[in-house]
Image (cartoon, rainbow, N blue to C red; front, side):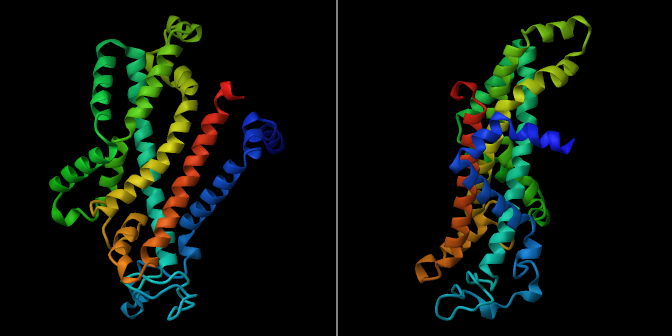
Length: 305
């Protein structure tokens, strides 16, 4: 069974396209390494930046190990709190990926659901959902995320803001990205609902929800997967931007955005490593995911085969 499944994957057009695209393979390798480093950060990180017992302020702002005054214990140097940059980058990537994946899943669920309803129902429901989408498209996604984050922080009690910061951030980024999914799924649904198999399902008495779930949804997921892959990079950058602006994750919690923001305060005083290495990790992660999304879009497009 496993052998036949592997043979089908190996003989597929998608596998052939992947193995004949150096950019896709290199991007997948970089993304996989960052993902594994983030997932297994407690095992591979030299230190735990959340463990106050292992943090010494006397080790603050140490340069990388290959520079004068550097220590082998801290390969990429330390930040202003004495935390190793390598460890904070690994743990920060973990948090950034968590927020990115959760935001994409939230946007996908909301956007696909509204797109299916809008495309299948039509009429006033379609007009209402699409007008809301048009209004949201007139504002930049980062502005909407800032607005939602600010409103949520204003409604929450002060003692709960730090504990709810990740949930608020996921909601803010997620709700700012549902429009692309909704518009794409709506267009595909309007095409599928007029086909014979959908009309046959209606004739035998299937409920609209069952028709959408069993018949239309599987046929509109192709473009959604491409959008989700590209949106993951956008969500990670948005999280880093919000954290850099001071409205995202708490400054005491290492994420790529907070590390870059903290390091920017020391950039001109010579401690460049505090912001450069998290910045490189963010660029590599976003670039590799974007390149994978571009490859997947081309691979799933039959006109380009």
